[in-house]
Length: 218
Image (cartoon, rainbow, N blue to C red; front, top):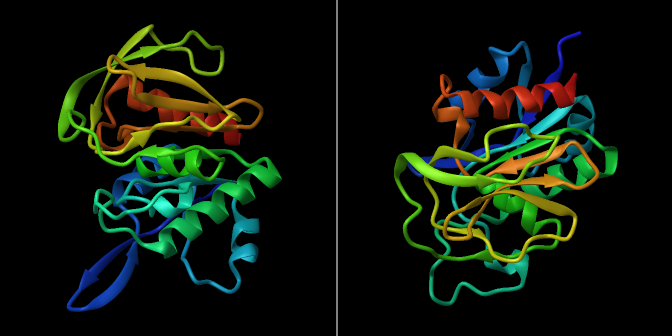
């Protein structure tokens, strides 16, 4: 039976109406690898039942987490377009995956959510990591769970990043300025990347990210 991947939603407003959506690129990267996908929704009273249908989870990119989720304030307005509903569903998905040992991949905001909801913190604003289409250099730690070259090149579209790493995570990839770009759970089939592999489907590193995720599911 085809495996089902639950994908976290994000928010858009059109003519004053709040809508939940999933970026088509995430769906394409999974369905082209033989997976089925399901958009999860927040404020769903039957959320646990929906989670139980899923074989794995993808926590997607998006706007910033509310700093209160990691014990800080947003008095300076550094964290943009925060939505508590999104923080809640990211948290619930991550905690469910951990409790039931389900595979999970986090991308960009999902990478940050994984760290925060496992007890880490974020740097609320940083320079030099936004709108970089390629040649964002990352030094990789040699690790059997993710076999790639010692130095890889990816894209970068973020202004926040991991500050204090959660104790249950290993940092496998670090940018030249010290920014943590890829993490893997020390015991569970859970990992996350700060960049956007879904945007570059023909890139070998992007393919490796999704292929690694699929292997964890099968």
